[in-house]
Image (cartoon, rainbow, N blue to C red; front, side, top):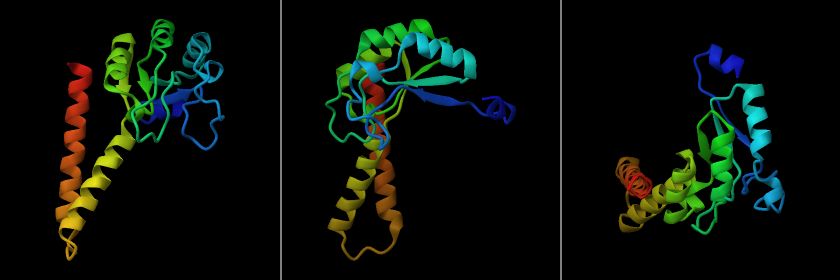
Amino acid sequence: AQWAHGAGLWLEAELGYVGGKPDAPASAHAAGVRTDPQEAARYVADTGVDALAVAVGSSHAMTERSATLDHALIERLREAVPVPLVLHGSSGVGDDDLRQAVQAGIVKINIGTALNVAFTGAVRETLAERPDLTDPRPYVAQGRETMAETVRVLLGVVSG
């Protein structure tokens, strides 16, 4: 954190086991591997990180929105740490859970998998419609627009 701050960078860390990673335990959604509020408070104080991604029931790389979050734990974490809370694996979280997570204290929501799915789907659709296409600009542009629409939709979910 000192090096990052000295270089003018903002540092986000992850504490606990957010599922979907090769090194995460099989029971990554079990309460025992979720982020402990007291441990989180110590970690933030000891490291000086600027934001903390927490393990509260989401999982990286989910393509279905079936994760269930522990909103009471999010609230306890919000009370315990003085930095913004981040939700990794948000692509697998449904609209109601995302709204509740923001209300409980999540400030940053990562949706990388949802963006990847949107982009890849748009590229595949464009190439299927135009199999002789060799110029990447049309399918990349369609992928970008589809990603932007995904962002607009999810922003509407958490802000509305």
